[in-house]
Length: 89
Image (cartoon, rainbow, N blue to C red):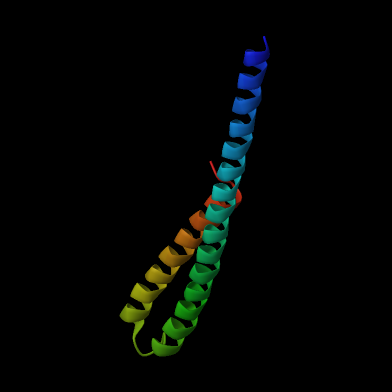
């Protein structure tokens, strides 16, 4: 009886340690995702600014169309990234 109690206590301690380790791992993963999200959003905004500045609509309409397609793809990816960040699995 005493041996079983000690065994349960030992496994309980181990499970608490494992749970704490998993929580730290999840926090680290979420922090890494948050930093990636911030960098991605900053890159998307910089791309938006420079693509509009470098490719004027009036002088290069075909290139402007291509750049606007790339811009919309970038924002679509940003939307998926935001969705996965706020609603993980």
